[in-house]
Structures are given as structure tokens and as C-alpha cells.
Image (cartoon, rainbow, N blue to C red; front, side, top):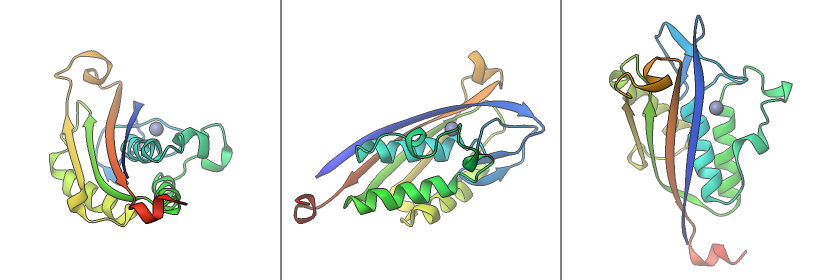
Amino acid sequence: MIRTGIGYDIHKLKEGLPLFIGGINIKSLLGSVGHSDGDALIHAIADSLLGAAGLGDIGKFFPSDDEKWRDAQSNIFLSEVKRMIVQKGYQISNIDCTIIIQKPKLQKFVPDIKKNIAKILNISEELLSIKATTTDHLGVIGKSKGWSVIAIATIYKNDEQSNN
Ligand code: ZN
């Protein structure tokens, strides 16, 4: 059985805050506003995996009005989501993501981001694709008022396991 899920997230950007992307602290004048660390990449990937497994969304498990998750490191969410999908008998086949941010240029950070996400999910980097783009200065993202991420995950389980 093969299933796919999408994830989308957007966070505001503000001066003086850290910018965590995929758990990597990116050098930037603007940082991500969020109840947790505002890591839209991890949030979108978590949502794509939950969606693929039919489990709901990240807000259901880690509500942003819960004090427990204030300033939480988002890698906690992602490793917990991985545990949940594995518990349902699924393995990750592929994850593809596009980060949409005007600046900074992310190209040089992508290898570290990829390595860290693969580590959190305990999967080979081969199963993971991370791309970055801008909006060519158009709209709120183009004006650096925010950044967003779209992710798609493909997961599978074999037939014997899908009977439970
Ligand atoms: Zn988020």
C-alpha cells in the first residue's frame, strides 16, 4: 500500500529572532515568528507524513496554544510523527520539499538541512529532496514578511502489515 500526503506551512519573519530551517540555525537578519521555534520546513514535513498516514495534522498533536510547546525545538515533533507512522506500519519512501523564502540564499545550507532531517527521521538522505526558491520579490514572501514551505511525502507498508 502506497500513500501520499502534502504539507504546507507559513511563518512570519521578524528582526532579532533566530531562523531555524530543518533544525539548522541559519545566519539571517530576520528570524521566524512561532509558538515553537517556527521551523516551517519541519512543520510542513510533519504534516505531509501525518497526511499520508491519515493521522490528521501537526496542530492536533502539538497545539500552538499549549504552553508545553512554547519555544520547543521542532525536531521533537518530527521524530514523534515518525514514531506514529511507523507504529501504523508505514515506512517512508520519499519526501520532497520546496522552501519559499526571499533571503537569505539557502543553497549552501541545503546539505546540512538535508543531513539533519534524514537524521531526525532515521532515513537515508537519498529519500529526501530539499529545494529552495524565492518569489522574485513578489508578495509578502518577496517582501521578506514571511517564508513558507510545501512538502509531499510518500509512505508505504507491505501487504502482510496492512491487515492489522
Ligand atoms: Zn509552523
